[in-house]
Structure formats: structure tokens, C-alpha cells
Length: 394
Image (cartoon, rainbow, N blue to C red; front, top):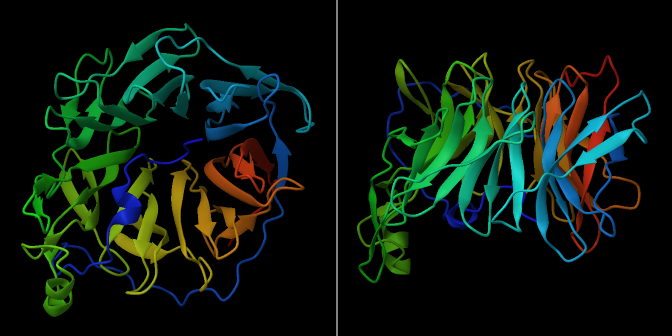
């Protein structure tokens, strides 16, 4: 089951070095935490389809609509949402599985306060908008004649953020506004940079926005080519002929312009933004580490406090009240985390009997975190963590 981005370059990009001024200062990253506390948030399993319990919660709004996907017994993936009644989180769930035509493998990726959802059909590479109140469905166009659109977020006004492909197959950061008749280019910095591979092939690697707030400010990343510091190394390995490589540059864009966000060490990407301008995503901590959860406030980058032995991770969702949900990958497991705006992130235990967990979303109003737990077969089951009313990571 797909739960994050389909773009493989996110995990395939070499750790390279860029020497460009970004116009804002990076805070000195605090020392990496030697260990990370376990949160007191209690996991609960949400129901799946008959004969199959697999699923994933991608977002929860403050009204208690949980959007994501469920699998059927034959392996098909269906966009779905859950609602809950009563105070007992182990019961009272209702699963809603609408009929989305022309796809058998799709999921909802976000839901706004009004119950309007953005989603993506993996088997047709196209994003869509679905109104859970009326059942209205709108497929989102790309920039070219093909389908090629990715609808990651939707704000309170129904504006969708993601990416759209042109006729060359390159995806660029995009937004769609109701009635969603055309994609609008965001024009991210460096998105048209050519990368030359050893065989002489020239490729444009584009850009993407995975976050949007209610003011319309978007957060995302671009593959911004930059000079390689260790020229001898890259000449020997023949990775890049023109001395440029795809380097992840985090950015935000609002009506006032583009802000390039600094990294802890050279590369970073933004994944979500709230109305206060808090951006979350991931940043390289040092030359030898992978991307780890980070946040930006007023253009300054901060480490979120993953443990020193963390291999990778990212912040995936941020609430209006400043709660962040995401994951950290360790050598033997992956853990969902929650961060409430201060202190260091805390891990959420998976469901009893499960090995790993990952969180996409949180609600500081409901005091909940949402995502999935997985067993030894990596089969995800939809999971919501209920946190104490007074819970804080500060």
C-alpha cells in the first residue's frame, strides 16, 4: 500500500553538496537526542473492508473525519473515510467507502474542514477532488495532454496543492482552484535545471508542493542543481557529467514571493505548512545522515529531535495548533512520532502485536495522531493514537 510519495528520486538522490546563498539563516541544529521518549498516546485499530483489515489514515480534520484508504480481499485499494461516535475509541467506528469510477487502486490523501477530500489514483496517475457531502468527483488535469497530476493537500477554500506533468513527462509544482478546470504552475526555484547523466542524457527533474495553508502559501521542494564540492570524487564515479546534481531545495511560496528554506546540511524538503507559517518536512542533519524530521519557523531550520541512531524520517503533517506527525526509521523498525510544538518528538507504539508504525496526521483539537501499524509482512492497518488531554512534548 502506498502511503507517501511515488517519486523515487526522494530516496535515490545522492547526498551532494550545494554552495548557494538562500537568503535566510539556519539555526545551529541542537545535538541529536541519544534516545527518544515513548508517548503516552494509546493506539486503536480502525475497521477495514470485509475479509481484509488493511488500511491507512492519511489525514484527520478537527471535526473527526478520518480520510485514507482500505484494501479489499483481492488487493484493490479504495479511497475511504471513517467517522466515530462515543468516547470509546475501541468501538463506534463507521467506515465509508464511496464508488470512485475508473480506478481500482486509489486513496484519499487529505480532507479539509468542510469534508472535501483530495486523492490520487495510482493506476491512472491522476489526482482528484471528492466532496464527501455531495458525492461530487472531479479529476484534475495535468499541464499536458496526458493525465499526470498529484493532489496531495487541500485547504479550507478547496485549493489543491501537488504537481502536474507536462507532455515531456516532467512534473512541476501545481495548484488547482475550484472548479478545477486547469492546473496552475507554482514556478518553484530551479525547477527547470537540466541534469546530465553519464550517457549524455539531459533530464529536467521538476518540483512539487505537498503543503498549502488557508492563505494559499505552499510548501514543497525543487531539484535545484548546484556545484559539487568534491569534484574528484564525482569525476571518478562519473555520476554527473556537468557537475550538477538533483539537490533537494525546500521552499515556500506566497503572494509576496519565494522563500528558499535552509537545510541542516545542504538538502531539505518541505511537506506541510499551517496558517502560522510553520513548515515541516525533512532535512539532512550532517554529511553522513539521511533525511530526518525538521521544521522551519520564520525561515529558520530546526532539528525536531530524532535519536542519534535514526536512519531516516520526516514530518508529514502539521495542525493549525502546531502538532506534527511523521515517522522515524531505525535499524530494526519504523516508528510513528508526535511533536506538539516544543521539546523533542516522541514515538508512538504500534498496535499490540504489530512491529512498526507511521503517522501522517494529527489533530490538536481531538488530541489524536493518525496513520497505520504494520506486522512482519508489512501489511498496514489503519491506526489512531489517542493522547491524554494534557499531553505535550515540551
